[in-house]
Length: 256
Image (cartoon, rainbow, N blue to C red; front, side):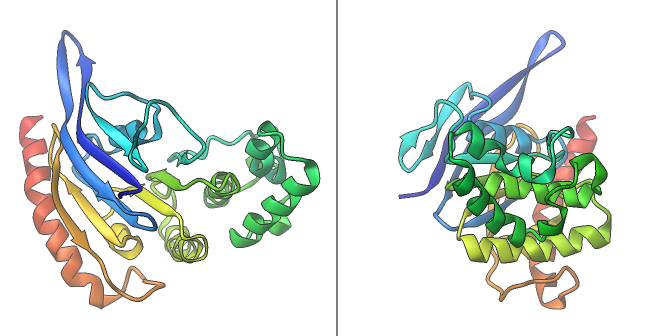
């Protein structure tokens, strides 16, 4: 049984006086422990699909199944990390990381023990008492990832979390996220525009078509970790995915 499964997900948005079909029947199976990266043309519905998987939006047709059960709302087993970390700037790093645990009623000593593990994992320990507004964008994303991980979700949904980062910071976090995935064995679904990023991270890369999006192709990536963006052995997979993606990007440009 798939950990997360999309069955014929269809989604419309109201655009001026007509309905715009964003997702045209997405079918996708994600197994436990997979690191699935989704790529596709800008505006094709990748983030919308992720929000539906998180329970933040509802499809017009189809179902998202978690462990075989339909998803009808948000839940602690599926946690989302956004492009912007959505942190509380008036709280310190440690308080941001522990926020969900506090709301869940976890006692202070236990909260501290759990959060310390992920502060260490994300190399945030010495910044624990800093306010998030004092941190760089890259450091804020580390805090956002740590805050999600402390809740021990079955599935981590990540919506272009490295898009706003400079190249050097992004490459560093690409390595760190691979290490986190190997340590935690989490199921991760990661949306990105960056094909090289997808190949470095993913056990599988899923290509979405132009809107209305469906799954065009799934490409398995089987290389040792940690992987680096500059690794020439990954070039054939990049070329394969780009060959699938370029016609879809062209369709999008022609439709504008």
